[in-house]
Structure formats: structure tokens, C-alpha cells
Amino acid sequence: MDQTTGLTSDDWIVVAWHTRDEKYTSLARKLGDQLSAFGAPHVLYDVDRGNRSWIQTIKAMKPAIVQRALDEHPGKIIILMDVDCNIHARLEPLAERVGTADLAINLMRKRKRGLTSGNCYVTTRVMGFNDTARTKALLQYWGRICRTSVDDGETEETLLAHAITEGPCNVHMVTVPAAYGGLETHDAPPLAAITHVSANAETHPTWKHLEQRIRVGFRKLSAR
Image 1 (spheres, rainbow, N blue to C red):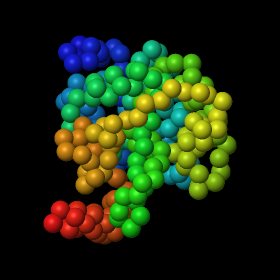
Image 2 (image 1 turned 90 degrees about the vertical axis):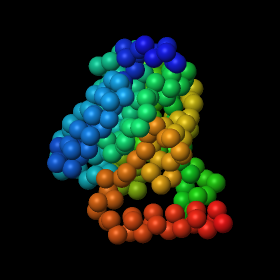
Image 3 (image 1 turned 135 degrees about the vertical axis):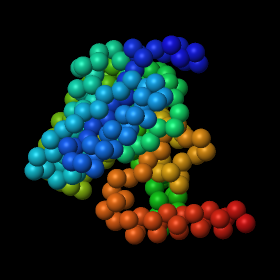
């Protein structure tokens, strides 16, 4: 039992998934090692991407993975995270927060030209799901609209926002604290428990690294 929260490893579980290629399988092993180091119960699902685009794969898998985890671990709090997250601290405080609601929603601020705006968007990078009837109803609705969506301009995140605001499920929500939100390393607060380094950064490293350097430069100028 965690002395600060009263939760045991039987109360919650971290869930992530990955495709079977070498890059994401390696990330899954690393994430599993980090979760084990901090005593976080977890399950990592490997999935077959098939002939789907990456966007279609994510839309198909994220609701299905959460539903599978709830089916296989009834009564447990589910923390869903992307496989390219990094763990730096214990996660019981996040699990306890998720347990106070149906859903822990992760909101991130939009960026424009490297600067943070006041507008937020829903991200599924790190989320929490409690095993309640309202959660299951939301998952069914979210999963259905993800499966029927053929527009790559619609992501699982925009469809989740639609499910929450327009769907039939009146879920009780809390927010994922920034320290647990899986922010990029250069944006994360000090002592963040979960950070994120996008696996897609390897595809376009020059632009990603340039963008990070610009953001750091803005911070240094602001501090003067």
C-alpha cells in the first residue's frame, strides 16, 4: 500500500500499447522498465497495424485498448498513456485523482509559432478512466465514432472531445495535473512525473530540434 494515497497495486493499472515494429517494441520495453522501477502495475499490449494508416490505427486502438483493460481488470482504475512517455516518479497520486471521477481528461495549451496560446485541446497522451457505468457508456460512444470515421482530419482526440460534449454520457471529469500530463521534456514542469519525447521526432529530427531550440531561446529572452 502506498502510504500517501492508501492505494494498493490491486486498485489501479497503467495501460499502453504499441505496434509490432522494432521502434515501438523497444519503446514499450523501456516504458515497462521505468514503470517497474517505480512500482507501477502495468500491461503493455502489442497490436497488429495491418494496412491502416497511422491515424486510423490510433483511432481504432485507443478506445478499444481502454475497453479491453477494463474488461480484463474489472474495478481497477485505468491510466492510459502513450508508449513514448517517460516515467520519473511514482504514479499513485495520479491514480488516486482518477479514482475521484469517471474520467481524468488531459488538456494541453495550443502553440502558435512556438508560443503558448490561451486555447486548450484534449490530448489522449495520458488519461485516466474509472470503472463506472458512465465511463463505459462514453467508451462505447467514442469507440463507435472512431471506428466509423474515415476522415484523417478527425483524430481520436477530436472525436473524444466530441463524445464528451455532444455524446449521451454525462461523465464526471477531473483534469490530469501538468506534472502527470506527459508534456514534452522542454515544456514539462520541474520534477514532472511523466514526460514525453515523441517517437515521430525521429522522422523529422531537423525541424523538431529547431523548434525546441526556438522555444528555449524565447524562454531565455523572457527571463532577462
